[in-house]
Length: 163
Image (cartoon, rainbow, N blue to C red; front, side):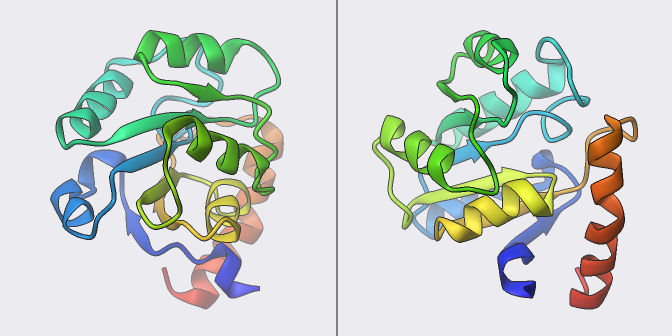
């Protein structure tokens, strides 16, 4: 159980990830969660931080794709504003959305990272697809109720696994 939920790297926020180290390891592609990774949960558009992080990744030589479980056009519209491709209805922790995003980018598991704030969706999907996974703390405290409920067992796993 611990392996699927254990990220390869933890950071307080996307801004704290040392992209030069990832580049040195051969990573060139980043699959990004949006809600509570790059902006507050259920934002209808990117916030300044979202644009800054996409630009930081782009400047470091990364191509990106937004990978979202959202079942609406919201993610597609956000991705268009960020000028990156998007896979909606990603079915995380399943791997179908992750694999589709890699195919869109021309990426493979050896050169792709998955970045997200939830162990049970983002990290599990990335690990199941064989990617290097990066867990970031949630962007904002306010979350939709069903995500907040998942934080309790997430907290237990983090304590047991010490991350």
